[in-house]
Image (cartoon, rainbow, N blue to C red; front, top):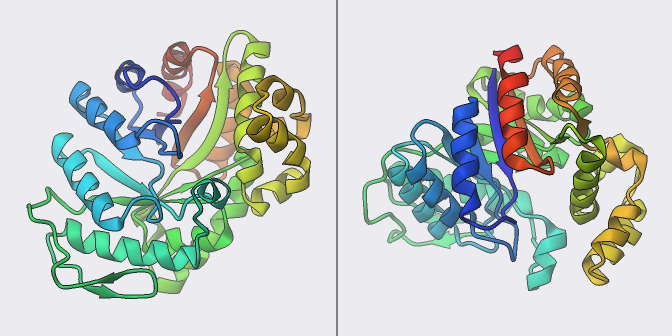
Length: 330
């Protein structure tokens, strides 16, 4: 069983060094940082983390080819892999349309854009030229890295929709499907298997991480409050597949989006989060977390990725999970 830790890029940059070191000590295998718009740079954070750790793998979850040119993504991936001595994983997807609209971007044919991006990045990170004439990218024969990459960095696809889930199965080295709620795994895996069967791959060659949210604390109310805030910020941007699994629609999140994004009133937004919405994640003690994860393992999960909020005290939550949860599944 593999375990990874995912964090948002919303904390002071220096904090990630201590958090990554704690994750490495706790026994986590991977440390991922998101790159959401107008927050801190994941690649800068991971450069610091790479130099402060020695074993744990690091990764972006996720970069997109609309706000960062694929050439620059390849440059950053190769550089971070070099800096970490081969511990970097590149998390990619097409980006969340709800957030891309902030900068006037309407992603057209997002799956096509992602596939073309992965093709050229794989060539660049293999030390090859990457001329390409596609629908999204038009590159000349001068598209190549002017230095030798350490290796072809593994590419993980972040996914919520059926098409992106199928794409994991077709072309990715790994997958970061968001499981909100965790039992959503049984919904997403058939789509990933469709992609696998389409191209005749072996599912064992793909590292599929069951990405869940959890908020762990000895204080249940404090844990609950932290998860409410995360749902208030991201709930409206989730996929219809996730809303359907929860018995909700985008309209249910509209008042919350108004309070959080327009009125900038986090307390009001959190108060509007309902009990069905809280099922998105796992809230409570490490015993509560273990019980829900056991169900995932029964479904066949081999990589559990625990993500924000994790708890009101991140360092303590990481230590608690390392002490009480990871050993039960090793």
